Image: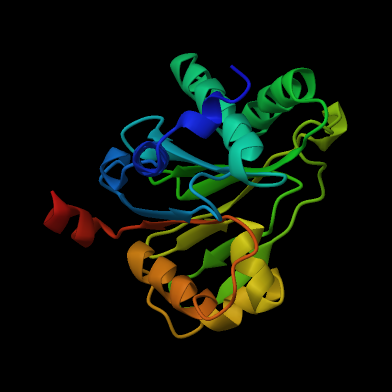
Length: 250
């Protein structure tokens, strides 16, 4: 039995890789899951066949959207297994009606610490409220969030906190800021920021881009495409539509 892997035919290996790639894509949140006020787009490319970036998005009411992105340390199969476990935990949290970003991260922290004590995970979780015009957000050792204002100004939102698996109760914190129509939020893994010299290189890349979610992702992809890949790459962008846009979409 120890040599069973040697008996797998090349064609079978290729077929398995294709199926794993399909599973990776199937796990990505669909833009259609976002309520009408929100324009959502996602993109994820693992370094290998599968990777350790986990993305999720689901409505928490007719005018509210929760978005989540996590980056597991390392890549390939070990990171992918932990990312899959995170997706399952996120599903349970969704079913339980948990909508506080800080509480989502607290519960995931306990799961990572207990199940995968030798690993850690950086994560970002936000709840966008179209009716209130606010964004509630929390980070766990993750890259700063990118916020693009309707006037095109792009800023970084920092928060000091340890990654999942290493957090303390004091690390879990939420902040609330304005999120008005035309504002866009971009979450990303360090596989996106590292080729551009870190998070501070991202606002300049997006300076001349429109705020449309897919355009923001395409702009970042074009900027990092010439650089050699050393890590998984993932981006999630969401923009709050104006009332006029919502009517057109509806």
